[in-house]
Amino acid sequence: MLSQSHIEVVSALIVVGGTLLATILRCGLADTRKALRVLARLPRRRFDAEGTRAELAAQIREIRQDGLIRAEAHQFDDLEFDEATRALIGTRSVAALHAAHQRHRAHRIEVSEQAAQVLAQAAEMAPVFGLAGTLISLSQLRVDGASTDLTGAIGMAVLTTLYGLLLGNLVLTPLARMIERASAMEEDERQKLVEWLAGEVATEVPGGRHGEAAARA
Image 1 (cartoon, rainbow, N blue to C red):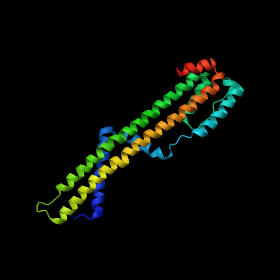
Image 2: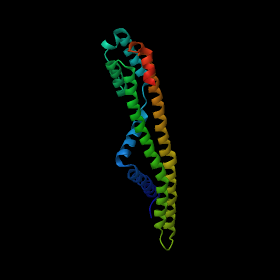
Image 3: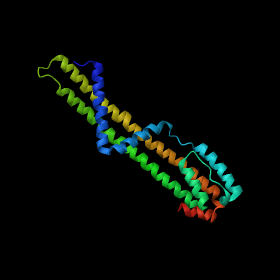
Image 4: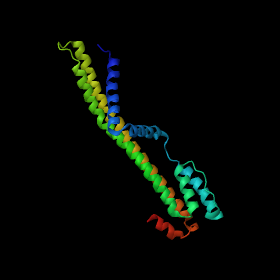
């Protein structure tokens, strides 16, 4: 007879291991790894909008003092704004700034949506493996219905069902929503910064405000 602690461990292994395997088979190993990396970055992923805005303000002051031709692009702790400001200064075009932003935005959204989809698939599979664990545990019953076997089998059946429901509805689904919310918040902050930067340098680029309006169109 399995002890209670062994029943809990086996139940968890059936549900978690089965869910992970099914997710890999459904979504592929590469996408599953990407989703796990997104999850690992989630606690420290917060975009530093204030710090980036302060650095952009310094860049804007230099552009106004020296002009776009002589200004040098600053190094930001952010790949998008590194590329966007280099494009702005190198081409003297607000359109290049917006184009760089859109490329990075599209990539970030694709990664976030892919990760959320992987977790959504996993959330669907967790209750399935809870049920699978229930069937496995009940299949171990002795034909003579010995009470010790019955108690252990029912215990594992209940736990696997419970673990499947909890994993799917209280862990995986909320994590998927967290990724979506964090992505939406970051994109909103980045969009505001790009629009602010474009507006501040519009008078320094050929075409001025008309060029900025055309870039947005």
